[in-house]
Amino acid sequence: MIPKRFILPCMAFLLCASFAWADDYSTGKEFFNNGQYTQAFPYIEKAAKRGHTEAKTVLGIMYLYAYGVKKNNEMAINFLRSAAKKNDSTAQLYLGIIHIEGRSTPKNDHMALHWFRKSAQLNNAYAQYYLGEMYWQGKGIRQDIKKAVFWYLKAAMQGEMRAQYYLGWMYFEGRGVEKDYEKAIEWYKKSAAQGDARAQTNLAAMYREGIGVKRDSMEAAKWFQKAAAQGQLAAQYNLGVMYETGEGIKQDYEKAAHWFEKSARQDNRFAQFKLAMLYERGLGVPSDLKQARFWYERASFLGHEEAKSKLDQLP
Image 1 (spheres, helix red, strand yellow):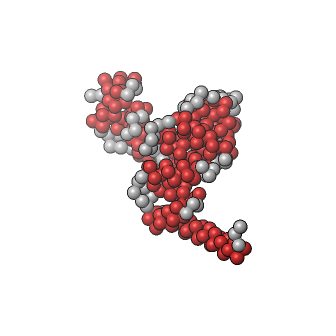
Image 2 (spheres, helix red, strand yellow; image 1 turned 90 degrees about the vertical axis):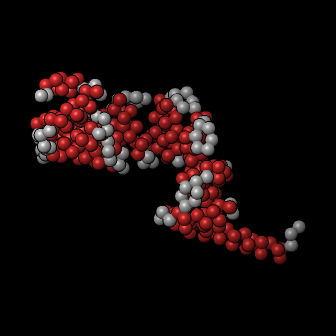
Image 3 (cartoon, one colour; image 1 turned 180 degrees about the horizontal axis):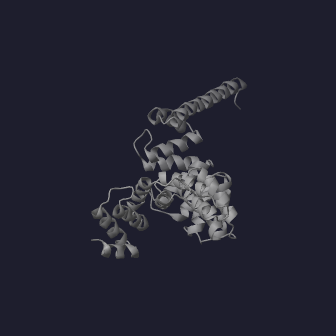
């Protein structure tokens, strides 16, 4: 039996040690959150090696992505596994990502599914999204669209923008759910507001065509602009068309040419055709038959039928 005079000092030591670990982690996490990874590393490492579960997760992530330390996938996996065994959902999430990407370990969809499911059951929104993806694609498990919808919805309700986008798309297409344009609009709006360029593009298209919502060309142009600025080629093309025609926005051939070129350089044959026409006619750009021919040829090569006939008509 331990004498009582030793118990209180031992408890005091444990409490002090616990507070020290917490202090190390708090200091390290503050540096980490501010992007000061090199300063964060020694504090996070000290807390992790003393058994702090969240510190192990953060340290694993630092090794995985070379944040303030040389990249070391083996060390990343070791620390993440240790934290995952303590039911840290973020560690479980990253182990799933490691297995699905094959980082320092062969790709293993079954193991990815295992860790995503554990994390998702702990209500991790990102893991819920990935689990929905696994069910949607049939990776590591038999494809099940209904379960994909179930997990996308779980994630989307917590604000996961990719899950919100996919729910919008599923309601638009009627995949796994009954087709419902109003619900598609609802989820596209939520995802678009968080910056998902695909959701912004699809939302813009629905406003432009008046699908599930009152037709509004100005609102369409607004969302096409947001998506186009992120490099979304379909949005760039459609924004170009709206500037060309003055639909929902002031007509501006120069801006039309700008956005057509952005999309054309991503091999959008429709944008290439439009850009060629502007060069041929000298609208928004100097008249240049050489440039017109160049873009007609690109569009024709990618299968644009009208571009082929336009090439025959050029002098």
